Length: 281
Image (cartoon, rainbow, N blue to C red; front, side, top):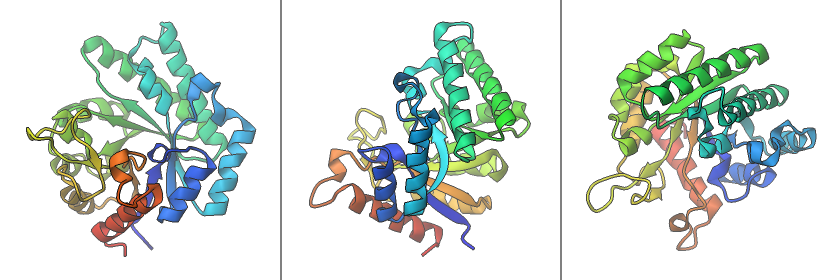
């Protein structure tokens, strides 16, 4: 039986919904991390039975396992860094609960919540309290909460270990390079498999000055960047991790749709790279 399963983020494709699952299938992925279809801004579509059924039908039709729900809209609202007593904080808590309920109803095991850019003690406290709320709520519904973050290695231990194993990581192998918080392979080995629910993998190339930033470093296919993809793969193997590797390559980017390539053909190359790197040919 394979140690690794390869999935993709729904927002890696230009169109969400069943078409994204079809594209993932055509590329060779077997799983998908759903986005939230607009979350609170669209009145929580994933809590609508008709929307749920459309995803579940497409999942069955294309053989794509629904690995998790990423609270994509909440990330862009930034509400996780607000006090729970504020209107923004209240909407954050509603978004978290709605996402957990949707996951439970759709039998999706994990809800992924980003805890990024905790600038200062107040925001750190607010984010921590939001995860306390998320973990407690998720327990009631039998759902796992996973955290993606940009904090330094030592802060991972201080934050995660206060939850006694109930909060896991979505470890993004690109983030430490982009945010300058560490060398991903070393961080993976230090954290160990028990703290990690799943991995995000994407790559970019350093700019002319040698920096990887959102503004200047283009996303490229896996193995074509300067963000330690192959070294991270080796670290994942070294810790004995088994489970989901989720591509977060943005196949809708213009630089990946040139020279006859399109969303699916680019994604196929990443699947081939992942299988070769992890020895799953």
